[in-house]
Image 1 (cartoon, rainbow, N blue to C red):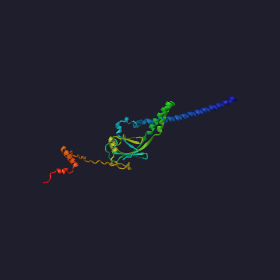
Image 2: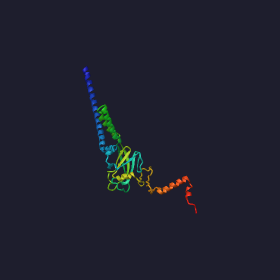
Image 3: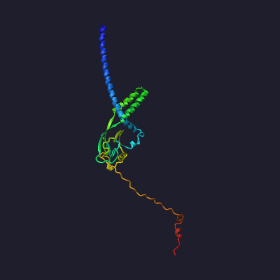
Image 4: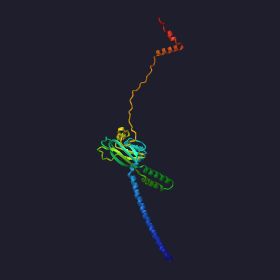
Length: 273
């Protein structure tokens, strides 16, 4: 009797264990598949933007950036006011000078209005840095596996915190570069919008904008008028003449007589005839 009761119960337990194992395998397969897909997306995100992350890193180490790139970059900050740039409602609005954004030749006609979505790499960059450093510290103090875990979490959190900034630019292009997409190149750093253009002259023109270049953007900024300094003739200081030795001697002698007897000078004059 006992063996007859035990065998069915054993079969039920084996069937239940087999079912649970099958469910666990399916759940694990779904989880691993999800992790694999997300890992590929995260890795592709960082790999495709590796050059942008390097440029973001060089903002903290400016000596690593070639000078030819720095001299062609226009930088505007959301904390400052400009004649032809403003940051409003999470959108940058910029009006470039009337020059070709690629070669710098004077522009003609109406400007081209372009809308961009620029990624803000600050949070993804620092998430990886903090995750790697935290994992390294925990690896040294607690457990070896914290180091790879910190790196993985840093990349995952950084991807989850990525965001974009809207940019609207009015620009000019010559007929030769009408279809060129090389410039402008846009990126962000902290509260800065960085616009890379094709010529140094365009950057200088933007930095030293005149009243006549004022565009539709930045209308709340007071106008700035350049007033040249008025040239004045140099004033020659007056130099008192230095008395000769004989004149100085006579002056001292007369002063001495006046001090002793003010009437001594009159007494020396010959009486009138």
